[in-house]
Length: 284
Image (cartoon, rainbow, N blue to C red; front, side):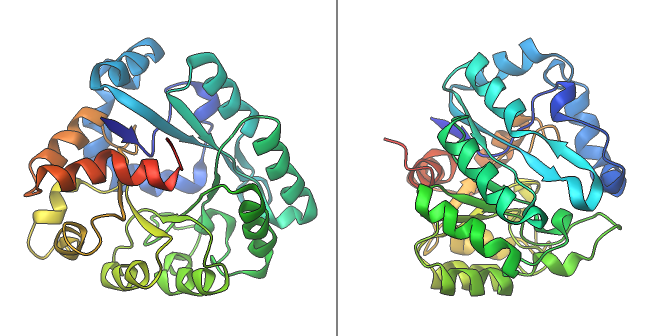
C-alpha cells in the first residue's frame, strides 16, 4: 500500500507561472525530462490512472499562497475542488499567506472546516520567513486547535530570489520546543544539513522527515550527503520517514523503483511508503 505525500496534477491551476522558481528547472532538468516524457505528465487521465495502477491509498496535494512575496498562488479552492472531483484518494493541504495576519488564520480555518482540506503547507523560503518566525505562530496555534498536521519546507532551496538559510533545521527545533504537540513533516529532508535534521527529528516525537524532491537512490550513494538518512531511517528513525514522489519532479513509478532498490527490510519499506504517512495524517 502506498501514500504519496507530494504530487501536483498536470493541470494549469496547479502549475501557474513561477518566475521565482526558474532555477529549479535547471537543477532538476534531468529528472523532469524523464518525467515529462511520460503520459502522466501531460494528461490528467493518465495521471489518475498512474495512481490507480500503483494502488495508491492516498496522494497529498498542497496549496501555496505566496501573494505577498511572489504573487504566486495555488488556491485552497483549487485543491479542494480536485479532491472532491477525483475522490477520497486525494488529500489536500491548505496554503495561506502569513503576511496577512489574522486573515490568514481565518482562511486556514475556512479551508479545513468548510473546504475539507486536512493539513497546512508552509513553504518558508517562498514566504521569506524562518519556521520560527512570529508571523507563523498563530497558524501553528490554529493547526493545533484544528488537530491538523503541518508540512514545512526544510533544507536548501534553489530559488536565487530568496536565501537558502530559511530552511535550516535548527529553526524547526525551536518550533517543536514551543509546540511539542504539533505534527510536522520537514520536507525535503534537510540537505545540506541532513545530520542536523536527524538530530531534531530524534529529539521531537512529532517531527517527521519527508523524502521529497530528492532522488531516493542518493541515500545509498557514497558522499552524497544523504547517506545518514538511510542509516537512521532504517533504524531509530524508521517510524519518521515519509515518501513523496514530488511529481512532476519525478515520475511516481520511478521514485518507487529507487526506494525498492535501497537495502530496506520489508517492514521498514512499508513504514516509509505508507504507515508513517498514515500515522502523520491520523488515518484509520
